[in-house]
Length: 234
Image (cartoon, rainbow, N blue to C red; front, top):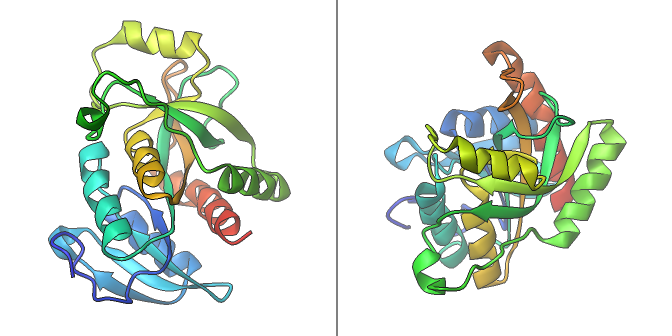
């Protein structure tokens, strides 16, 4: 058992999907997994383990932001030996061709700062996804007929951003979307030799100011969960 997860040895599967919202973890487990069991609820951060097409899967909430995700990803890797970690979450679109409900597969994740910044000091480390997962996720998305974009995203360390000049540069340099967790997940996966990917649903748009109505989110988010599960076991 660990401080922040508290699951027993063997409760966590080698493959872990990580939504930020613990209630989204519960929804995904109840919707996609067979015989899902709640294995942790420390501090209200829910985690469930069950099976998908005969494969054991854990869906563990990560909280918002890279510091929170770093805690859960570190414990999942170091204490529970998780091998494949896939972030499933929402993001803001940053390119005209990216629409609401589209899925973004994050090939790279740019950022100003992560909890790992102190390790690299002056080095500007460039974290990226596992190519096998990325390719499998793209194939799964194509098979499902989901409009999908592959490329770089921006992992911000603030939600209420007051840097419109930085957003302009992200857009100028082709960044597809913005979220708050993937860069640290990719760094930790690189550090420990694990597989990682972020599969993101566009829920709002920085250019058009569109936003996905709350009642439509679960239906749209189902596509990314299915893509993530398919990619994990391709």
